[in-house]
Image 1 (tube, one colour):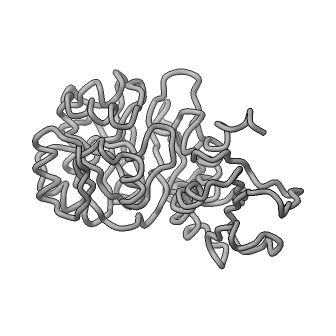
Image 2 (cartoon, rainbow, N blue to C red; image 1 turned 180 degrees about the horizontal axis):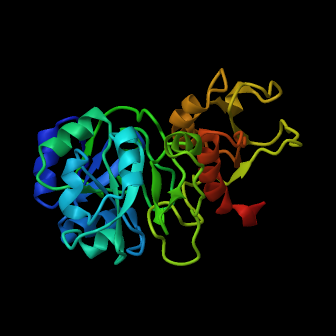
Length: 323
């Protein structure tokens, strides 16, 4: 299969209407989308990614009003969050109606719902008569894509079209929230920080983003977001050795002993929003350098730093036995 790259929403629409999968840009990461009501089309997402059917997907809509036929209710606290953050990087876990295929939710009663903000995907959703089911557009367990080229590198020959909307503005997946006994729960840390949620609802919600059983929603598995290169945290007592072929991803340029040929700086100022936007692109870039090992700094446990550390915890977990 030839994989084309372009920015034609009508071309993407025709493919989706025919039951094909298309990579789409969002403000978070690129998604691999199919008609969210077509089970055969949705199967193609799992096949292209190598994703287990037990891992639920998120449905993407053009507006809050468009979700009504697909959810049983929208509790007041979740509607308040939707009104504040939509369109944007927030996913709500809501009780689904029978219109949502079981394959989308892995047989569970709740479905992840999001209204994205990226202009090109909003244009596409406006001309479709169905929501889009979409996880990230990468091979399962690998680093999420934030540029069209990242999708092409992993899924070339597996999908027919990549809708190119440029680099993702946020660069990290959506925050997923839902209710448990009427209390707001964060099921996946993401582009909306805990502090932002607290500012709207008046308290910091607890986090339940790990499970030993079937995931309740996307992003809950232990090993995820990983490069091919062995990946580890750069500990504070780390001593750089010139004769080793290691690569380093740093928040700021604060390790002068490391040559520029071996390090990638996320931001000159230490801004966490900028770091989040560039994080996955930096991992993709450094992963192609064929280092023996790749090291990354932990972020400060505030704001988006908490979300980024969550991703890095899962990415580095894959390589624990290699250390």
